Length: 328
Image (cartoon, rainbow, N blue to C red; front, top):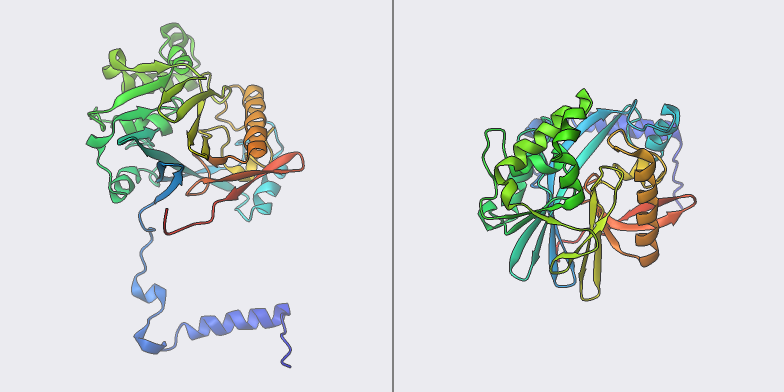
């Protein structure tokens, strides 16, 4: 019997042999990837799955890279770096992805959030390309539902030049979120670091303010979609329970940022959480609930396609991704 030698020396030697082989002629006329001018971008980022009779399409809007230092408000940097390393991620910076959802039910097309539009990081802004690649057209969107009013969720609704991207869509927003961000007194009293966010909300929603439909948490806002209050990240931050037949999905919005940090450590607070303790309490409550009920979840900032299930793991939780399928 041949003995398999997996010592570090043989592994390193094997790596050297592979590197050398890349300079040789390959069979069947195949050239090394670098010689083929391999593209730097992936294929279009959309992924479909079913929740009962409802079709959900995850649509990726690229990512933004942020230094790790200062990202978690209530944890030591060394602990945050350790969590990143345990997830086999770089320990100096975090790539934050953006994933919106398109929901097809009853002949209607509904969006949950709209991505960065043309106002995000250079590595974002892929949403429209991916939306069209999935076979959708902006004019066919019947409703746009917003989870909260941070720019990476609302700026895709209106471009910098004022263009309204979804001309035929009803606009639906959490009443508590609208009350906070559209309050002139709060905008005037806001610290300088938040004044841009207040201005951004008015830029996006001002032209349609009289037509915006506000909804309350705890109610079915569209067939099969129920709003659930999830405050802390913002005052009116909302998640959505989707149900059809035996299928159940909780759209977690920004209940967590990257799951390697905030699903595994639900008591940590991201710099974006406006009320850190409240956000942590909401996070733990929702993660407990979806874990106990074995609900599928969809996140905004998890690695694409940003859906799976939540398993209890000690004092924290783990995101178990769905198995990718070529069929729905």
